[in-house]
Length: 296
Image (tube, rainbow, N blue to C red; front, side):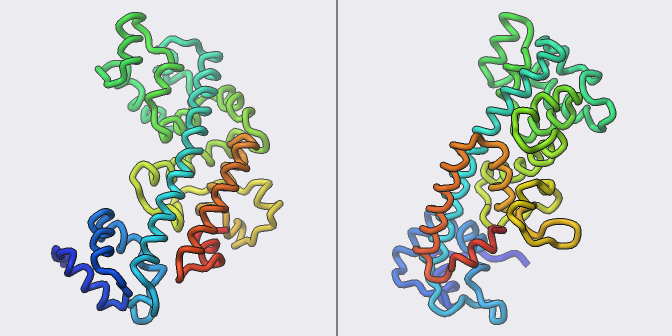
């Protein structure tokens, strides 16, 4: 049965009936106006509920839920900032390696023989590339190349590709291209880099769609077992590690390999301060619980 529409007053009343403390109804109404009931309450309520009664634990306030919501928003902003740097680095080195191997004519990246023919679904990649060349686009730099030069080199085209398409292009690329790209990153081989990029695409999409991140688990993607997993002596579940595989901690591990040292440690400090702030502003959230939910 579809849930009925509720006014702000009805939303507040429902929350109070579920044992949520609302000290200032006017302030609560403004929060609901700004963020929306579904995004705020439905997205972040579970951490604060008694699993037996399904009501909120005693003393939980709407400010506690809102503090967690704001933490997750700031976590997405921090993560996206560094994902964009990785994305731009990948655009640069992938297009360079491909052009060194096959030249800078657009026919090169539209020719399936220039990809790893052992891999399936290369046509899926062509589906994303060819329309940018064959059809009018909203990218002035692409249209300039078509009009003036009659050719859109890959080092121009890559700027219009999503993180997901870049990840697929790397995965489908010939071995010499993948090898040249992976050599830019210390401690991982070309296969491991492909798995990491595919995994990070999932978190990149969370950022793009403003979805909950701190507790996210990728269902079908994970990063491979890496030296850092072993070095951290993480607990194992069967043949694989129980943490740092498909959770936010896996993002941190991936960043350690893909970001320059200086930038990674800046990110790490900002993440630490962000988590400390989240715990200090939330009466129902301990550091241990937050770390566990994020996969640390």
